[in-house]
Image (cartoon, rainbow, N blue to C red):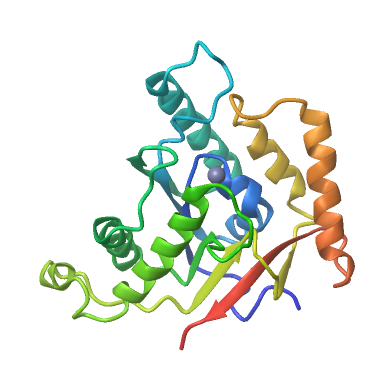
Length: 232
Ligand SMILES: [Zn+2]
């Protein structure tokens, strides 16, 4: 199956744990949508301030570096904007406060598609990937009825039910997007994360090979895979 009913969404919200997750997880699909005129909004939940093996690096310097890299990567994808929640890396909690912050975003932007981590991916080690995925889905539920987080409604933010949710890095996939025409942009955007990527050629090969494997059984030369949930 190709990407579902909403093949060319107007507005997409990507809720990701760290700078670089959107590009690795679904950069080809995002670039393709951007080319179709879709407005893509990034919400990056943590500062990514611990992802370094450089023993001289500090969290403050790394956070600033990674925000800059994420802005550049989003520009290469064609995204409309990037918002940073700046929670500490590795410590994001699916708290009511964070749920409210994401729900506020959903009501403000009224996306057709919400894209986030699959929180049910087995053996996923990074706590932020589990917790951000879960919190984004909880926020999606809170965004759809006015009595959830009544403060939002009082501020004039109307309920919004996101019609389609796509989970990247899925435990099992039920939806595949053709990225043959956009894989180069995905790779180019990944390269913007200078502090995170080494051995570029190897990385390119690995990503292409993974995309080939994902598309193989579905007649697509190169694909990204998702678990898709429809909300009626
Ligand atoms: Zn991550």
